[in-house]
Length: 278
Image (cartoon, rainbow, N blue to C red; front, side, top):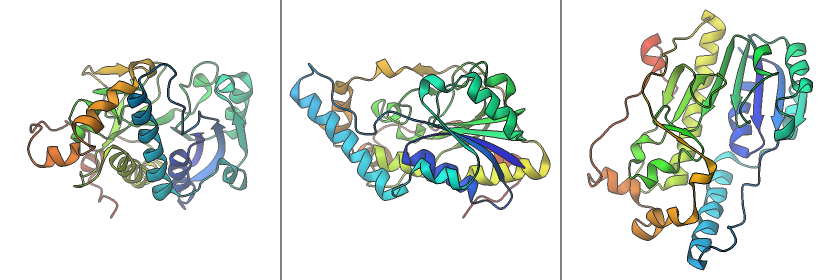
């Protein structure tokens, strides 16, 4: 199966796409790589010093965990794999990208880390156009959706969603949810990294299944959830994670102090009777 990739520029995006590249059953027809924002943003001006320090600590710790998990990965590697188009966010939905997609003539498209795909690119994507969303849709849609489950003290809802692409954000039919087993001692960033690593393993297998069978089971999103915007996050939200819980929210949940609600997940492996990656 010829696969077209849309990737962001962060190490987590490159890590996931490199798992697709490594599969013997997937031929990479082309790669669109979109430049993302810095992984170490500056704290907002005007906020109390304590909140600014929490902000710096939060993103520096994320950088440490991701470097340890994904290593030093660069989008420059893509050029050795397949025809690659490097764009910024403003160029993502352009005629230039639409032409590149048409020339790739792929059978399926996998997207992780780029911006929302819209006209004129969306109509020329292959029929199977799948996006990995870091968050359990429809409960957590939009931005920072691995942070908000910790803020709302439900770390068991930290996961990922493989879904079809439609014009609305994170609203397409769902193929699979990835929810890792929570590990005692892990904080928000370690849990997020576990989501990405497990998702990569599972999605390679599902794309290989798509290559072999020509289809995957899809469930329409019928439940409602919350669409989080980037403006919804403020540095003072970090007080819950660090001042109140010292980033021990996973342990609090495992100790039975945060309720017993469990996510209602869509499991493609169960539907297809496939063994999970070991």
